[in-house]
Amino acid sequence: MSIYRRAVLAHRAYWAIAIGGLLYSAATREVAGFIAIFVAFAIHGVYFLTLNCPKCGQSVYFGRRKVLGFDVWGYGPYPFRRCDKCGEDLDPN
Image (tube, rainbow, N blue to C red; front, side, top):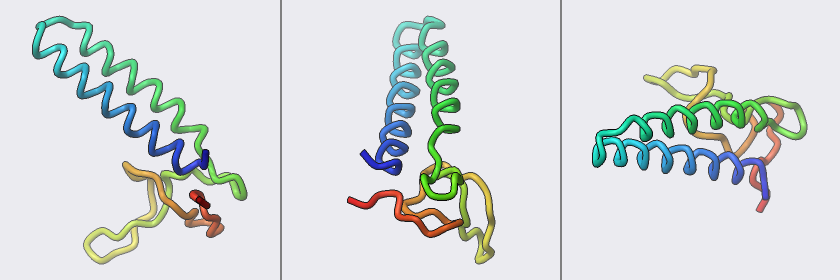
């Protein structure tokens, strides 16, 4: 499995757990749902640090994005398919 696909899978799993925790908290009025959201956030944050380009080591979430017509470098909410630093294809399939 490519690094891009692992990043997308982790991203989707995080949102599934977060939304599930919110729905559980809303339905039962218990704190366990909020704990699930916090745990998902912590696990995603740690796993986020391990997803790097195999060629240069830059994070798959870091890159150039267009904001109001300007190039802005920084971390984004979704991974890139191609590394902005070295041009490596992160999803070769």
